[in-house]
Amino acid sequence: MTWLITGGAGYIGAHVARAMTGAGERVVVLDDLSTGIAERLGPDVPLVRGSTADRGLLDRVLAEHGVTGVVHLAAKKQVGESVEDPLLYYRENIGGLTVLLEAVAAAGVRRFLFSSSAAVYGVPDVEHITEDTPCAPINPYGETKLAGEWLVRAAGRAHGVSTACLRYFNVAGASEPRLSDTGTSNVVPMFFERLTRGEAPRVFGTDYPTPDGTCVRDYVHVDDLADAHLVVARGLLAREPGEDLTLNVGRGEGVSVRELAALVGEVTGRPAEPLAGPRRPGDAARAVASVERMTREFDWTARLGVREMVESAWAAWCLRHPQARAM
Ligand SMILES: NC(=O)c1ccc[n+]([C@@H]2O[C@H](COP(=O)([O-])OP(=O)(O)OC[C@H]3O[C@@H](n4cnc5c(N)ncnc54)[C@H](O)[C@@H]3O)[C@@H](O)[C@H]2O)c1
Image (cartoon, rainbow, N blue to C red; front, side):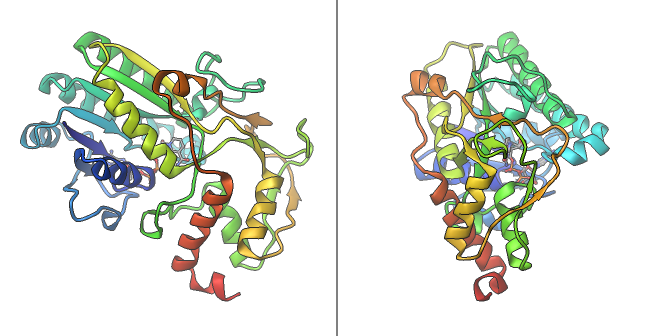
């Protein structure tokens, strides 16, 4: 098998490339480097610089590398930006996916994994979100992930491609600093950024109906997430053509923002008593995955805990921001 990993120079994609090559799979990465970093990839991973919307390039890469499966991670992923510029998000996330699926169907590729997100669920009021919890995204980013899933399943059924849509919950950590998340839109780097400036972490909303009043989320280590891709990718080999799977990937355990801030304080050795701010529109009180389906279908569960996520992310942060360690 040779796997095409789109968005493989990104934070999660580079971990997926590392997990797959480490397990002996052949991979090729297609990335336009709009937010990706070529240096995240090892010397054994070929990188083709270009867009998933470039049909000619896709046809060439699929043929030249003898691609037999695709892991599609390339996408825009900033919720706020998607509200400001929904056309960009539909063009990149849906337009790019449509062209990619056309190329996949034409080349006779039979396996396709799609990076989806817990954002497809919107703000459901349930203890654990199962894959059957109704989807009601509340921003264009989540809409493009849900519409992307529809597109993947429909194309898979029509063209005999077995597909899996992985709905990631909150991803954190790094397997090594070189691969880490350089953005600051997720909560862990957001806390680090404030601490590095000598400011207390900010918590948005302390009056939610949760045990300590702050939002509760399900965090999954990026190494575990990468391993889930490997397991599901290999599992697709045994599936019927056109069969589709939708799978939550999380730990199935809730951690409140206040608990996370306390852990960040312990790991960084900085006082991290959070500053209480107002609620942000669109934040669910609780978003925790039911992970039963991944366990049942693939005997897979996450191994790493939130402490490992924070420790590995902090180590990477300090390398990029030496002043943080010195403070
Ligand atoms: N990070 C999270 O917490 C999270 C949670 C749920 C889902 N996801 C999904 O996981 C995927 C990867 O996210 P990430 O956090 O690694 O983001 P990232 O921005 O680090 O990675 C995205 C990669 O795709 C590339 N890319 C974007 N558009 C492209 C295009 N049209 N053609 C080729 N390459 C393109 C970028 O250069 C980048 O390398 C995305 O689909 C995202 O929606 C991420």
